[in-house]
Each structure stands twice: as structure tokens, then as C-alpha cells.
Length: 300
Image (cartoon, rainbow, N blue to C red):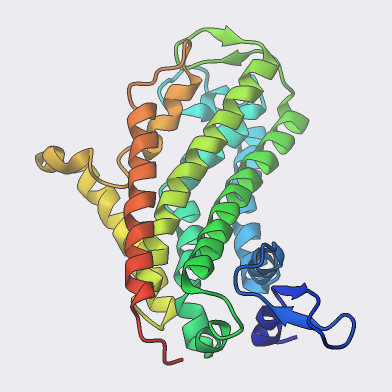
């Protein structure tokens, strides 16, 4: 089935029409999840995205094997979760998320976000999609929802592979927090879920930026590169002390704040601003994508 055929069958609603029994009449505003499910199918059914998922999962596997073969010396602190892996396998997940946060997760989200609208335009299906009938606002909402789901799945993939392999190789037990105290295993697992939720919010905000960029071009690869350059540029600027006046306004500034969720008690000094930053970027660039796409002439 082609992309166009899949889209055309996304929202049929059977209603009495005076015609043959069971005739399909398309209603633009019919409430249905088929369009959203078809979008998820397109994302998770592509081989290249499966390859990307395998790459994401490779990092925690490499970390677990490396630590098993050559355990790190005890000590250390801060965000260096590698020192805690031999004491509790759950730290494989935290180490993997720490290592993948600057590049691999943003790259995965950028590839999906850049392909949302630009990919349809590049394939020549965007114009057809808008005639069958899916209004532009709903299309953007579905695209953004799919990005958010992908961000969650990608983050969960890294964390679950790391946690399961780490527990299998190193076992569980009390979780040592960044404050030096210990938490029961299940409390530590709940903290990991909070970390996953926080990182998902950050990646979703990047996806909203990517959705806007995707409405500006018909080249998905160009959109992906632009999103990644923006993210890496933000990280570079965040590392320059002379630019401290703008640090808190950068989209990546609070990405590493998830470490505060592993303190006892949880520190909200950076986490709460990080949540507000993610929500602000999501709202601003979601609105910008809607404004741009709503008045755009679709020719392909």
C-alpha cells in the first residue's frame, strides 16, 4: 500500500447517506485515531528507523559489556554514573542516557521531525493528503503527536535495554543518589521513570522545533541537518562562559538537569525551569509551524 493509499483510508466514517448500505462518506472532522495510527505505522515501519533504534540500543550494550570486562575504580561523583554500575545495574540505563543525550537522541528525533512535513512534500503526497480530507491543523497535531511518541519510545528503548542488561549482569539493590544517600531499589526505579519522562519532554520540544523547520522546506535531509545543527550549536553556545547571559534561553541548557532527579531529596532548581523551557519551546514552535503551514501554498 502506498503512502497516499494509506492516508486516503485514514478517516472513513460510515454514515447513512441514502446510498448503498455501508457506503463510506468522508467527514473532515470525524473523530478517529486511524490517521494517527497510520502515521505511527509509517514511522515505526521504516527499516531506517529500525536501524536507528538498533544504534540507540547499542550504546547501553557497549557500556554494560565494557564495565563487565573492565570494572571502573570506586569513587567519583557528579554525573559519572559509570562508577555505580557494578553496585547496581540500573546505572547502565542512566549512563547510556547521559551519553546519548548530547547527540544520538537528538539525531534520532531530528530525523523523524525533519521528515514529518518535508518528507510528504518530497514524496509528492502532501498535496494529495490535504484533499482527502485532512485539514492542516489536524495534520500538524497528528505529526507532532507522532514525534512525541517516537521521543518516548526512543528514550524508553535506551533506558530499558540498559536497565535490563545491567540488572542481568550486575544485579540490583539500593540506589546510591548523587547526594550520597541510598534509596530502595523500587524507589530508584521510579526515579529512572522520572528521568525518562523529563528527557522525553526535552526531546519533544526539539521535535516541535523540527516540525517548524520541516514546514520550511521540501527536503527532509536538509531539515534534519538544520535541526541537528541547531541543537549542537545550542550545546556549544551553552558551553561558552562568555555567553552566559543567554544560556538559560537556549533549548539545550536544561537537558542535563535530569541528574537532579537522582538527588535526595529531589532538587527542582533546574528541573522545573527545564520543564517550563521545554513547554515554552513546544508552544512557540508548534504555533510557528501552524502559522507557517496554515498559509503555505502546497504544490507537491
